[in-house]
Image (tube, rainbow, N blue to C red):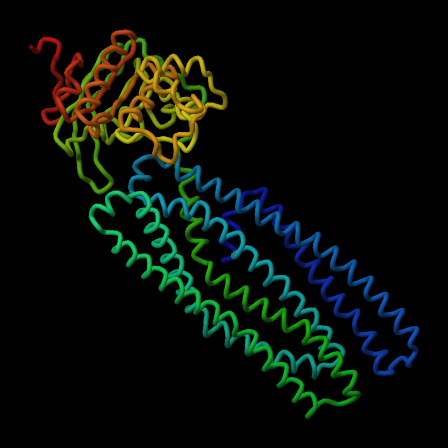
Length: 552
């Protein structure tokens, strides 16, 4: 396990972890010194060095100063350890976020967004707080116990052997009994929490459909079932983690009994030292056992992080120097696409798109219209063939350069929880209100925007909850125009709109195309009316392109 964790760290983190391990060992030495500082007080109280009250008080004051200074240093060392853990959390969370995002649309479509979000945020934090922290505590407490047992074996071999005989079997008994059970409980608990998050998110997002179908009760049943599983697993985990407390109490009582029966010499001194030793060893043993239980419970995080970071090297490096022009157009040569399960959607597809053209794409559901869009946009990689823009092949390395000159309007417009201006200038650090006003006029939203209570700064609500379908589509078009796109992709952007709104959007596109002669439009649509104004039509059922300008 330690080897797997170490392999996940970056080179810088590995070097830093060596310093953290040194601080853990130093903390153990300081804890040991703090315990040893109490021994002289025990000897004074038992008249070993005489009964001088003034000397005893001075010694106590010195021990107090030492223990205070020792604890202050331990706090500083603990801060270094915690900062390291938080940096690992930040680094792993960020790397997993980047890795998942860069694996592309096909990967994201095959995964649950709730699950991926939990892995990026929750699992990375569990790795930092529960896995790393537990390992450091086990190491620190283990060194402290070895130091104390070594000292006792040198001073009073019988006492040292007695403590070993009491605590070591109990520790092995505990770990042997609960190891598999804790790991199982941890895995079941995380699965239940994941299902619970999915249930809640789906219920909130699908409120209208659930209400109309009167299906909320089914969501509530799933919620209760997941909650029962979470409670059952947490109960088992908490109970198992209480076991060290009972075992250590039993060990202390048994040890004192054996010490009285078989101990020799000054039992008052030996008993005092035994009490101090067990006073610190008991929390150390409990800390090791509880940390070990926490580690077993959180061990799934290692698997998740490994999988989350595994394909970092496989992701194509982005060519920051790449650039695309669309002076001539796009050429698709012998294009084919097959899904990971082997299902081939289409093959040998060839056609061209000239600058300033209006291309419509139609076909039955499942014919591959949206997949073709994802290929043209560079979201998917073709199984065969190639796509060239002004003669330059489109690839994962240069697709970000392609995105600089294209706009994309999907069926469901992505609306962030921000203002109108922020949604149009999506991703831009600064917004140009004059430019936004111009594109709003182009998409016939200027009058509506002027009536908003806060103008361009008006919040649009979560997922655009305050917008109509037509307004969302126009904002999507305005977003593409704001960035100065030369090619606009429309993926069934009007399929969810009513006929009147669809006609308005189509008219706006037609007028936009007439105004911006060099703007290229590529439109997917189910209805013929949405692509009636296009110059050419690509029929995905027949995989042929025909001229639409000659149609009556």
